Length: 104
Image (cartoon, rainbow, N blue to C red):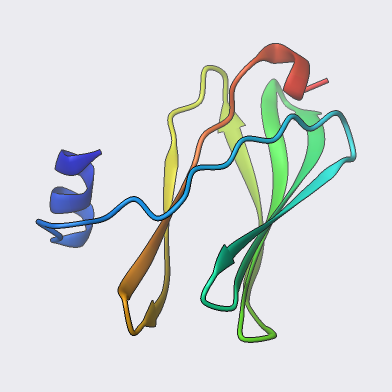
């Protein structure tokens, strides 16, 4: 994680604010309140062309920052999403998918 943050974002220091886990069956949604008026939403859309398909949304202070479909090959590497700047710094959200049962 440290090397990825340094290489992809140029960050040398970071703090882990929260870690959350959710098990999502097909067509289920997990909503994570990350604090600082930051909400992250993941919806499991199942398998598409042998990849896991998810819908991602990020909300900040009641406004949608982005919404996008994403495909994860199996096995999937974590993705990093650069979030908004707050008084505490810039949020980086790491999303990792695990387990075949989550894709069904």
